[in-house]
Amino acid sequence: MLLERAVDMAAGLVITVFACLNCGRRKAAESEPRPLTARY
Image (tube, rainbow, N blue to C red; front, side, top):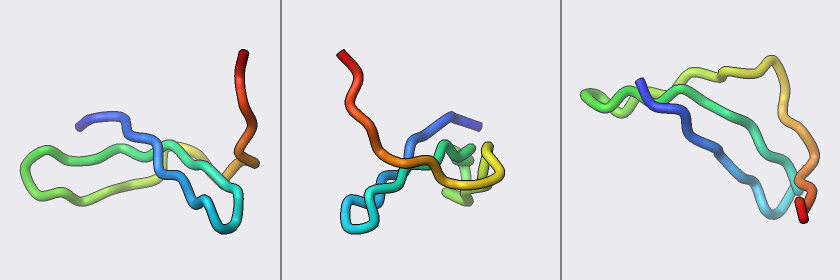
């Protein structure tokens, strides 16, 4: 399993998911998406 960040630019949301390297299946690592914000 690999941690991956999925971004929805249209809605402005981001969620972290676990992605399986063998089958490509994804499972949410967080309960709900967060607003997309910039970090400096």
